Image 1 (tube, one colour):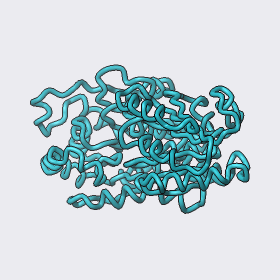
Image 2 (tube, rainbow, N blue to C red; image 1 turned 45 degrees about the horizontal axis):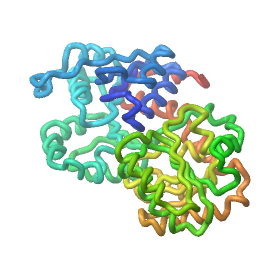
Image 3 (cartoon, one colour; image 1 turned 180 degrees about the vertical axis):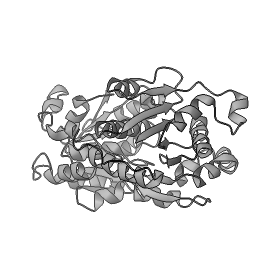
Image 4 (cartoon, rainbow, N blue to C red; image 1 turned 90 degrees about the horizontal axis):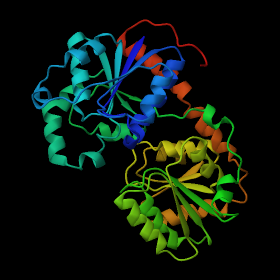
Length: 390
């Protein structure tokens, strides 16, 4: 079976949507599926495109559409030929022209396509530039959604929000994003991150993600003065060179001497896992997070988590008792953090319950196997089961 994944951009700056595509595509490729990627990137797509190409997954970049092409409902010959050779399309996103073009090409040749909205159809997202989005929804997107074989949501929260769209939506499949379990089988030695940053045995809270408005750093900083736990260190792991990040640095510097905030910048590979291994609690008090892959990474590293009730995974986190869910109130965030910080000496590290939950439910291998079954069902293409392992 040939699966073509379509996305507007693979660039690192796109965050979760492109990272999830890469994780799923790699897992599918290792299980024997014929996988290809179609993207609208015009420059260097960065490390994620190179990672795909390194294992033999072709990545095709489509030139930017001209203005007349953007008004047309007819796909370009290049997109049409790639789609015609596929058994099924997995479309990641909703707004970019290449996504609509690929869906129309699939419709013309009678191929099935699945749309992963990537949180872009949530109520919160639709309230940003609402007029423009309502117009596009009426002009093109509603038809694109209604002709899909399925809508791919990554959490129950996203599914519930997407169902509020005024459209005759097809079947909704809820499948999470995942992690490469192999990456977390052997964890970095505990204490390395603490030693490198002079933290010692002080209570440590880690935030992993983009330092961007609404992603949660601002809410975390507001909660710090309200903590009952003293001598806390916060490590903010993620790109921190934007104007907003500079403002967060200044805000952190204005806190009392008892609260120390470290901005590490972007960390990759085992370097990003090390702070999670050393953390006493992971925090993602985001204003809006469709999924929250860093939450799963923290759990896989054996760290309990505190998330806001606006994070897509909040239901999944609270049920097994591996984390807490708080509102965006600084008092509520501080209270949830304090609960875990006060338990830090009594929880054996790594937190085995958290690791088991993450590695069992969110391993890309298992998710890829389930998607193979979904594809066969949706496309009606008989295919042997994917190769075990990989």
